[in-house]
Image 1 (cartoon, helix red, strand yellow):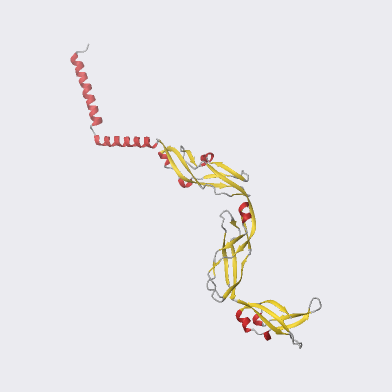
Image 2 (image 1 turned 120 degrees about the vertical axis):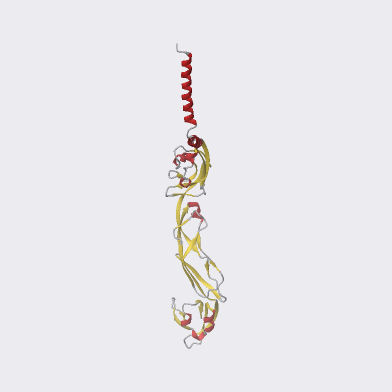
Length: 308
C-alpha cells in the first residue's frame, strides 16, 4: 500500500490542478466571458419568446366576389371580414396584410339567395408557413344573385338657375335621346330614365349647348353603358300669341284670320299687310287659304290658326 503521505501529496496536486482550471475558466478574461454569457441568455430568451404560440386579430380583410357573366350580385354583400390567426411571433410579424384577400368564386351558383362559407377559403389566404386561421368573423356572406339585363332608357336634362328676364326656354334635347343601362333585372326593370348633371342656364339669353354631359344613375348596381350625352337647350325671347286679320290677295275684300305664336318683338313689329294669304285648290276641290310669312318670321313662329 502507498504511504499516506504519498496519497496526500497526490490529492494536493489534483486540488491545485482543479483550482488552476477553475481560476482559468472563471477568473481569466472574466469580462469577455460575462458578456458572452449575457448574449447567449438574450438569444435564448428571444428565440424561446418568439417561438411561443401567439394569437393575433387582423381586421378588415377584403372580400372579392366572382360571378358568372350573365349574373350579378344585387344585394350589398360584406366587403371585409375579420380573422384571428395563430403562430409564433416571428411568423406573425411576416404577414403582409395588404396581400390578404378572400376570393369567393360564385360562378357555379344559380340565381337566388345564397349563404357562402368563408372558412374553406382560409387556406387560400397568403399566410406564412406555420400560421393558421383560428376564427373568421363573420363566417358567412349572404349573397343574392340576379340575371343581368340591358335596356334603353330616356335621358332627363337637369338645369339650375333662372333665365334672363324676358326670356324663356323653347326646348331641350339630348343626343342621344336614350342610352343603354345594364344591371340586376329587378333594378333595371323599374328604371325608366337617367338624368344629366345639372347644367347652369342662369342669366342666359341664347341657346345653351354643352357637349359630353355626364349622366347620373341613383343605383350603384346599375352600369351606364353610354355615360355621356350632348345637350342643346333652345332659349329665346318670351313668346306670345297674336291675331291678324289679313286681306286676301284678290278683289273680293274678304279677310283671313291668322293666329301666330312666337317671340314677342317680331310679332309686334309685324302688321297684317306684311302677311300674305291666297286661295289655293284644297284636297276636296274647295279653295283653301295659304299663308306666306315675311322673312323675319320664317322658322320662328307657329301658325296656330288660318281660316277665312
